[in-house]
Image 1: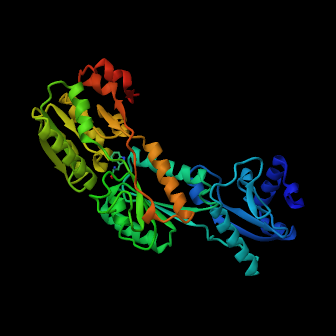
Image 2: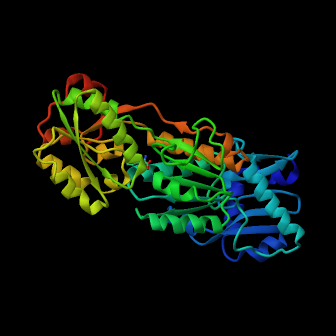
Image 3: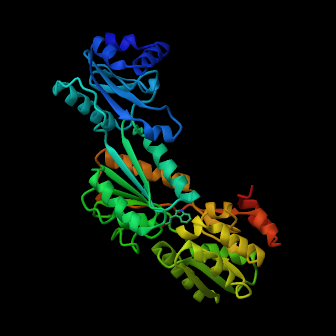
Length: 417
Ligand code: TRP
């Protein structure tokens, strides 16, 4: 370890120096101390997530070649034999590329002889486009961001994350993906099928989609194993047949299923096709109620009153974003409402077989990190989450007077508060 690094060896001392570095008008002091370059980023994004305010120095390059990230003292990086390490026993950065990019940026500043503060940095940029807000997609996004962080891509420090939400409107998605392309993102992460379909129009930026139920029907990839183009990602493939098997155990003798879903979501159409196949093979009848937007959900649910033994919604974003309207109606008419995600059970659906969206988010984040590290989406297989668990809502079961069989109770996770 060289002398400069040694000087920073104590955590307390590093912290103190960092406080000095980042407080007040730091620039003159820094130059006087032999700092050769300093990069600053807008910390507004960080503030949104509960961090500190204002502009902060994120990278300091000293004459002796020592680097640090002053706003995160445990993220101190020192150079030793041209390798990068976290100080204080932090694990070695998995993706050295992030640091290399930061290093290149710093060197560029030095060689430009600028000694100027940059308001906008040249950190690698990750665009996130999410179709709509609902708990499951929000969980996915949070876990994508935390996995990126795990892998060394910390927003505002080693990477810039630009997040935009389409608010359930496909026109918005189009505008957002164009703007993310124009911003020169190094990778774009698209959460949910409609967002992925909009992002897929971009051909010269790597795209990682997340939670796309049926990537082939959605026209995103030709092969799950070898996507071939600039796009790959994760899938939450849902088996309607498996959910119907659960329904038949919980509602013995059920014959008619009312399916409520959005006509515009390919992900839902694909699950409903699976439902129809299962129904045909198992002597069940399906009544379909398609909605054009969330304001039609309540009416669609009401129209099934007295006509069905159970109701079912596929993995439908619009339904998920307004599900309480359907839950209310089905509980009043005492119709067991089977759904397709843990979040939909938490929000009042009766039961499902669901995957872990925490893990799906993490896997998506890891794929994006791989792409930032130079991996090619064309050769990265789509990752399908196939491990499912039974989720139930006991409160909903009570509300409709349904007795859950003991064997199901024993294996299920109850999501009612
Ligand atoms: N699989 C959905 C799609 O393809 C997205 C999704 C993820 C979702 N989790 C969900 C939809 C929960 C409804 C409920 O777009």
